[in-house]
Image 1 (tube, rainbow over the protein chains, first blue to last red):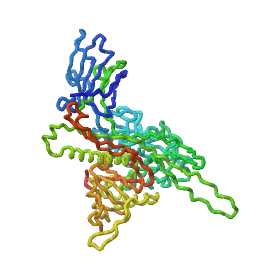
Image 2: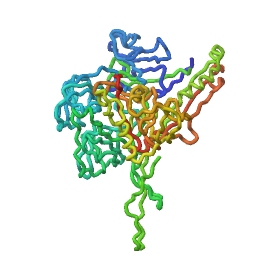
Image 3: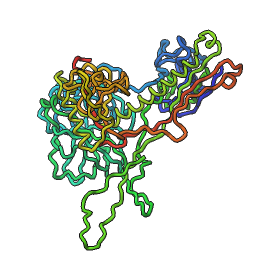
Image 4: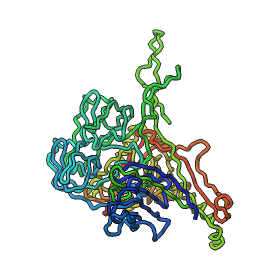
Length: 340
Length: 269
């Protein structure tokens, strides 16, 4: 059976896991730990690893598995087994679809403070920057169904910079979360709005960091239901003049100083109010003078458009006994594809 | 791709002084769209052809054709799912947030689209002298998941497509007309599991008017279904290959002309 070496490369391990993008998929994948190969052996250190794809049927590698070549003892004996063999270590995982909502049990929260920013109490394994979707938030139903980016996370709590809950009547007493993908299928994507100031240039706070999705100069379109107070903002289109990653805000060239105050509906009204306030991308504004044939304004090539169409990747677990190696290990890798 | 914004309607009166009114520089909004190319292939072995003996290549061509159109539809669905602001349904009676779909919710979207000067996509179907039929107005388009069909039938004033006065030219995917929207259903419609207040699946329904979104094809490179003969694919001329390939760029061309509803189902799903 003929094969093609699709691609290959090398990286210096940091000890953490590594994602190798394989847009055309792969049927076989090989790594060598060039640093550890000639060194005095340490028991269990993986010097090479192999992974077999779905084309091998029953012989395909399971998730977090594969074949490992490891140092066995101090006389430099090599043993070949699988990552799942005792003593097990983490191997390869081939990821072929975007986990929009992760296959995980709903995680219960115990409270969200009615403060600015809101702080969530929950036993969790989330990391800073993760995006969490809330639902069934008893006492604070107005945010049920919204996505929030988290920060200052610990195993028992995290902060929602995008949530200004100080004006809410009550704290949330219960509810659930799921971690979702940071990227929608297509970017730039729509974002949830949690606050709009009254100013000559309105400052709009989002539930996630907008700098990851929008850029200065982009036009954005607002959808603000009447239940959020600032009904004058509804269906307006403005241009972003500034963005803040620290505050999750964007400044737009819309004069909201005479508008009504923006405020979430109450939890009790949430079930009958038209939610949510959102902002969506609307292109980039330029002026074209046909007399001089000159274009002014924004260079649309800087816009962060990307298709979120998922690119399959192979995840190499990190660590001395895993394919991506320990810190400072030089790892060579090659991906193969069978021709038929 | 770009669109020109409307000229200002302020002023413009000639007051007899002989002074020309100020000219206006047209404002253009550029829409960023990246060309993407997708492809799929099937390898056929000559012995399979002999064994199967039932026009394998014809079947495979049809399969690739189906893949191509299905993939295009999914790509456009993802664009609508990611880039459009949705409004929660609240007029339903299932006690969830968002609620199941109701006439008030649909009418709300109609107001938004009309208020933004969106144009309808489909022409009206005139009334005819046939029992139990009813005319439809010129309509916007709504796309939704097949799981919503039970709820669509409950909406006040719904016209299922069998009661349209004329059936010519209707697509099999069309389900009904509600207010000024014609609803098309697909099993691939947008849904997000477990995010309503009660933890139910939320369905998103993009609703849009004329030229709100675009699927752009590249000049001289659109959809191709091709055949690679055995002497090209295989050294002993035993395998042949069929492939489909297409280029597409997707964009919401005007956010004013597209909106949508988030809803849950009346019976939990």
